[in-house]
Amino acid sequence: MFKAIFIAVLAAAVTVSAVPASADFTGDATWYTPNGGLGACGAPSQNSDLVVALSADQYAGGSNCWRHIGVHYQGKFVDATVVDLCPGCASGSIDLSPGAFKKLENQDVGRIQVTWNYE
View 1: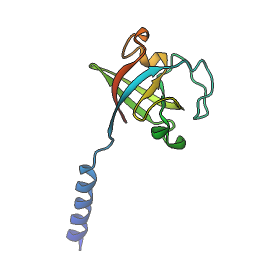
View 2: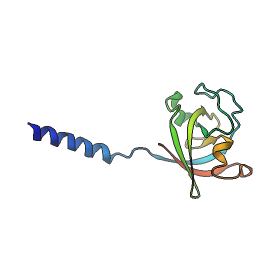
View 3: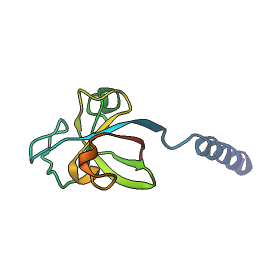
View 4: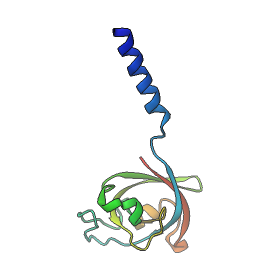
């Protein structure tokens, strides 16, 4: 009996570990200024905070509020917290606060191609 349970648990663990933890998304990253205002998730954010607004697809009616995403650009990385909705963003594209965008590129660039995933 113990052997059968152990095998079942082991099989379940192998099945779970074979599924990727999160998918990578590719899209444009732009920046916006929260200026202390309330984001769609209901809390204020500052321009210096490492926060992000997601497209309607990824925002998913708020179900991804407060999740962290890892954003990659030309060997640079920033961890940003989902606090807002970006209604003008295409699926896979994100809008970063100035604090988060500056970790990846100079704000004067304005738009960069990034890869990101939920952490």
